Picture 1: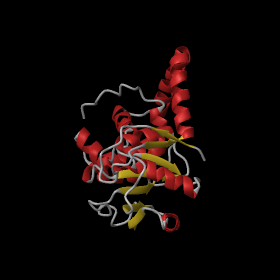
Picture 2: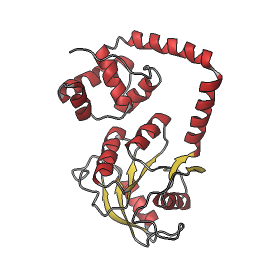
Picture 3: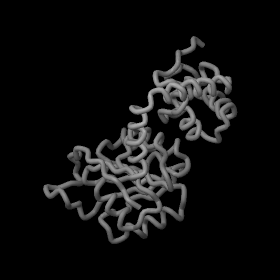
Picture 4: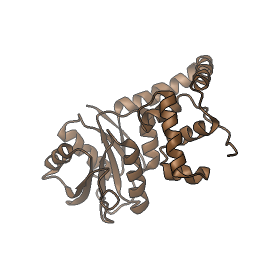
Length: 255
């Protein structure tokens, strides 16, 4: 599986030295995954590499808020399931330890998640189907300050950008279609606003604070949104909304 590297300015962290292609011999690493099998497999793969496993836990486990010690250099987090919780953990890691490098691991990535996760603080995206050597080299590049995304995602970004420039008339037709689809779902103004927050990967607590309503009310709205648009989870709802909601957002209701 080919991985494309997007060169960013390397961060000046404790895990790079004066020689740009060397890593510290021991890199404290945390594995965050709901799959015990995946955690065990990663521990086996990273054995005899510079990545020393300091913690291995679940995204939804009781220790998810405490796994990232201040000296943790790398966090590998599974993003195949519970993507909303994974994004929440990413933000917590980034807030607690800004220098920690974060890699998301999944069977596949959609463009919407990559954008949201990168904004939240993910430095690299690796596919589960990658070979052992590819994964280890990818982790090394991330620790050297690079940002990695799978080639398929990079290609979709470039193709999408070209389409936006070359097909303005088609975009207008698509916009009209999206508005019609939104109206057909009969979403309230408040539900559209919350849906917009979901596209940014915002948790219920943050949405409730932003809109000055309770988390319980947010949960009720989210359930109604999922039912109306036919989505099974928040990630699907966010993907659906990112293609249909106006880019400038929607008006805030006075409720």
